Structures are given as structure tokens and as C-alpha cells.
Amino acid sequence: MNASNRDLLVLLKDESMTNQAIEHEVESLNDLLHNVESVDEFCRVNEIIDMNRYKINRDQKFLVEVMYQPELKPFIFLNNMN
Picture (cartoon, rainbow, N blue to C red):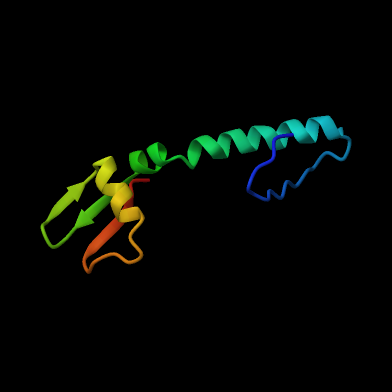
């Protein structure tokens, strides 16, 4: 099993799963979460709404800059497009 920097709590309905099947499930979850938590995916599903300039910005570079700011400026919002 690959070492990762996360703790996963996996609840199983079926008590008859082998350790190998459980490890396979955890590895699959890790792969899935790794892909979903990438910067590219974050930028694809989020946008910046700037009410000061009345603009919506979906540019990846701008999103990453805003993401790493400790605090957003007034009337600038991070919006999930879900």
C-alpha cells in the first residue's frame, strides 16, 4: 500500500472482505482523491467573482494567486460552480 499524507476512515458493510480487498479499496480512494484534489480540477470547478470590477475570472493563474492569499479583499468571492 502506498504511503500517503492522509488518514481515511473506511466504513464497510461487508465483514467478509479480505485485507487485500480493503487495501485495494483504500488505494482506489487515494487515487480518486489525488485526481480530484489537483490544482487543475480546483481551477476547473471554481471561479472568482470580483464585485469591485463586476468581473468573473476563471483564469487558472489568477485562481491560484487568490487561493494562496491569506485573506481575500472585500467583495471578491471564490465561487464553486457546482
